[in-house]
Image (cartoon, rainbow, N blue to C red; front, side):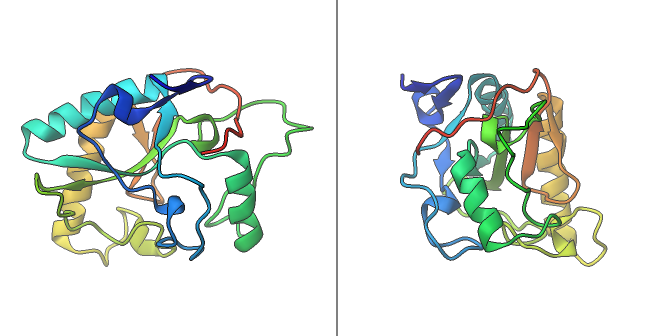
Length: 188
């Protein structure tokens, strides 16, 4: 099993995930390939939680598609360079003056996911991934009933295994079960 610090390659632990790292392609808000590979790394604790959720989803007839997990600091800096707006992109950390770490993609403690049917067809959700609009939030009154129901179901299962949902993005979940560790800049 390949590890980078506390990060593990998710498919080494469980091969039943659909990995579609959007930032390893040009199919993302930047229209640029940000990651060098499509290998999905995640904190080992977060991986355990995600596998628990995946097993529940699987019993209900769904698969988990992972759009993002661990993100190198350099990728976050690239996002900020392309879209320096705190409402949509987190400012990269000033590593020289950082006093505490938070749970986020740069320490592998967050995951961006959606659900598919067993053949891999994505379920209807409130919006597209990385849509910078009110539709990204489950509280938006303008999203479809089907999208809202699917996203609420996903949120309920993810929270039942230990994740915390981010209100502004239906696809984004934090592992709040452990103390956040250092941010990393491993190349992926």
